[in-house]
Length: 471
Image: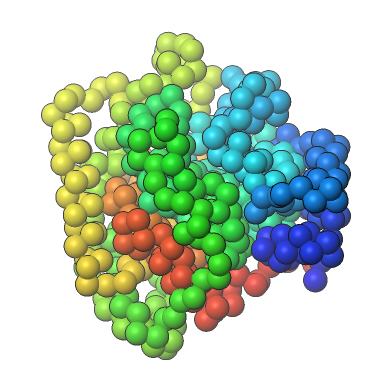
């Protein structure tokens, strides 16, 4: 097997046992990037010479017998919303096209401390807004399975880079589905962790439970490897919790006897027929593996008010973040970002209060359900990967979407519950496009959730499939 298709855990073992050097691993992935990134446009701000020099330094530390971290010698590219010291970080905006931070974000600092080698950044939509990755700085990221289709977003660059074999691991961030959507669109895996498991202190609301960061990979085992490097408390993050040891060792899960709550539409959401067909088949496979599957009517419509209102509250800070008045940003920032900021600035206290109440009810509703079931299963996206040249689907299964967030509600409704979610492949449409499902676990039950995800992965073998980029 080519090095670029080997799992991160396998590469890590080979480096530690000196079957491979860090330089060999990084060089193999740089060669893969050179071969396929011009088609996919997933990795930006590439730094090959610096990455190879850092790989050499990693090999020298190994030769001297120095202690090394769990990601020693593994290449990674950082989502272009995350600050990287000395590496261009644009946030997908032409207003920051030449911005080079002086300090790493906490996530990046932890990845580097664990031995990961940063080869560049992964593409993202402007300000991370929307589940389709395009911007005026780097252009559109394309789906490795069909280059005319979207790779999803906002971690679309990360998802596409993993699927195309350009990276063994990637970081993502998830608010309305920005890990789960690209995982679904690219046939990879991702974890939206319980808020605070992976701390992400910043300039915004440190009590926010909607926006989280987490790992993405091609295998569930690789998610846990990455978690050993990035979980754990930080004094700047009051919600932070957990410890790397929780994710050490092999995952041992079983689908036999698993209590599964299947919710096909999360309260009446339109789901594209091709997606419904794949998800129905996946649920049948759960049952065939011995799981006790029950179809439930989980009505999470109240979550829309909570998500869309509280998201708008965050976007009300847009003028402050961009250092300009909102009127001055028109025409310089994409229209959907301006719209979301306008929504936030127009809110009144009563609306925000109702949204907070709805958020609390949604958490309680999902938590109560998970007292009776081990996992909730739902579609990870309402559509299959769509035309990369449109901004977002204006309708789903014949139903018009109210705005650019409407087609993402299968994910955003789960966001409001604050429960951990693993995004895993479910199968492929008749024309070969990936479809994923969400596995929702108990609050702070991330390890158990990953065991269930690993059992599903073993039962299906779907993560072993790769796109036909080399055909």
